[in-house]
Each structure stands twice: as structure tokens, then as C-alpha cells.
Image (cartoon, helix red, strand yellow):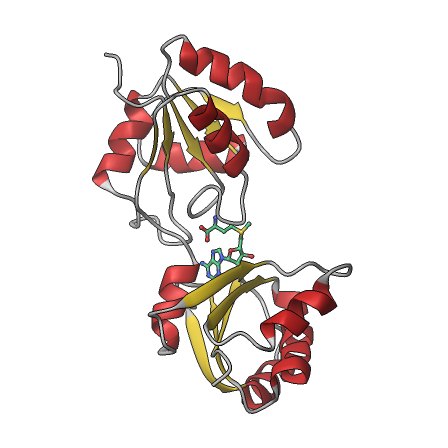
Length: 226
Ligand code: SAM
């Protein structure tokens, strides 16, 4: 059966394997092949759902080289699904370049709605969610200072992805640029057994996390400048 769309961008769970839609599972079964960031991780996921399909590696290290070939296959009538290790592809993950190339070639692209870490983190924070900026991972060195200087004036709620071993350092930097009374929330291990949402001023968050060995995956949500 020929599917109406050539590229399906399919979100996968960020921890809890129940968080996948019925439609996502059908598309993963029906496409001609699946582009996966890590074929081993995605192989386990497909096995869990009893899906057998061809997995093709598509990650930040090969996407420049493979896009042309993928677009050619899709132009010939094939359909594929793009998945990442967790959450929505193209959100702090590979995907944007392939989506853009497909659109430029006149192919039909469809992103299914589904899991992504920043939405539950934003809603759990209790911080204004009507207007927000998604910053993803801040640059580690070059560009970090100028980004934070601009963000010090940001009035919308800000969302950051951060690794656990850099959490306290990042919070301390935020306190330096935004003031230690600025309110924030750290969401850790969303949708998993040890999910934790810690809310408070940056000073309180630093005090809480510097006493611990921080593990797991982290989203930081910070109030905008009032
Ligand atoms: N594509 C993913 C999405 O849609 O959210 C993001 C992928 S990015 C490589 C991985 C980062 O997402 C982690 O370092 C963490 O900041 C965040 N993340 C992913 N899963 C998470 C979870 N279960 N709890 C908290 N943060 C999570």
C-alpha cells in the first residue's frame, strides 16, 4: 500500500513506554523503512511493540551525507518514518535538515503529535505557559555569555535542556545573570519512576541540588523577567 505522506516524523516515549500513540505504532509498521538516530535503542523500542521494519541509521554525524539519497528514495515513491532516541525528532535532535530538504523537493512531510520533554516540564512548573522561549541546550563555551546576557532581558518563560552533571553550574550561572530570587523549576526523569519536579527560587534550587549527586535527564524552566 502506498502511503499518502513520504516523511513521517514520529515522536517516541521519553521514558514511559506507554507514551506512544496508536497512530505512531501504525505508521512505524506501514512505512517502507525507519530512519533512527541509534538503531540499537530504536530496535529495542520496536521489539517492545512487536514491530518489524527496516531501521536505517540517521544521526548528526551522517545526516549531511544521507539526505540526498533519502530524498531520492522518497521521490521514487517510498515512505519513511524518522525517529530519535526519545521524544520528538528535530527538537534538540537530528531532523530539521531532512524535513527542510523534503519540503524543498516538494515531498509531503507530516509530524505526528507526541512526547517531547519540554511540554510536560513547562506545564508541571506552574510558571506562565502562555508565552515561552525554548532554548534547548545552551552553547557550552563560545556564545554562552552573549546568549545569557540577551536572556537576562527575556520576559517570556525560558526552557533549557541540561545534563545532570552540569545542572548546579547552570543554575549558578542563571542566578548570576537573572538574580538568585528568580523563580524556576527543575524537572528530572519526566514520565519515569523517579520523576521529580523541584520548584523554587534559583537560590533554593541550587541549595537543593548541590547536596545531591544529580542523575537522570533534566529540563530547567525559568520565569521571565517581570
Ligand atoms: N527530542 C527530545 C525531545 O523531544 O524532548 C530531546 C532530545 S535531547 C538529545 C535530550 C534532552 O532532553 C535531555 O538531555 C533532557 O534535557 C531532555 N529530556 C529527554 N527526556 C527527558 C526526561 N524523561 N525527563 C527530563 N528531561 C528529558
